[in-house]
Amino acid sequence: MRLAVSGSHGTGKSTLIAAFLAKRPEYLYEPEAFETLGDDVELNDDGEPTADGLRTLLEYAVPAVESRASEACVVFERSPVDYLAYAAASRSAWRGSSVAEFLSAQVPIVKASLRGLDLIAYLPVSPGGLGGRPGEDRGFRRRVHRSLWRAVCP
Image (cartoon, rainbow, N blue to C red; front, side, top):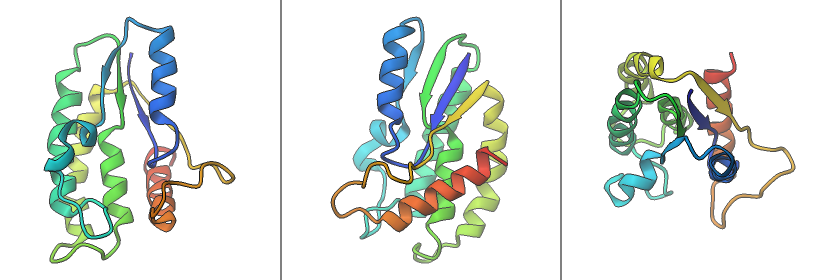
């Protein structure tokens, strides 16, 4: 099974995946694009990915899913849908770029890539859970959660 663990930042994706892999060592692990790309992802002044940053993440995540389509046992930390949710949550924070234009261009690409996944496990933001990281925009985290919820739990 090829499964992706999705959710806003700080929901426990890494913790869940580590526990899963400890019990199921036959699974390959595909880290989230941001972990792999790090400083190559453009961020705005608030530390949120810009349109170019999210495009970079998707240009990594979509081929990663597609390249593992023939693998029997893979767990992905995030699905390409996660990056669409981050775009939707960005509202008008992007300079010179429209979120709607970005989504219009990227949604068909992401939809096509999902054929390479068997399951998306969604981890929601817990109402009384982790408070987030120091300096983090909790409103942004909630917007990501709501956008991702609408995308994977229609």
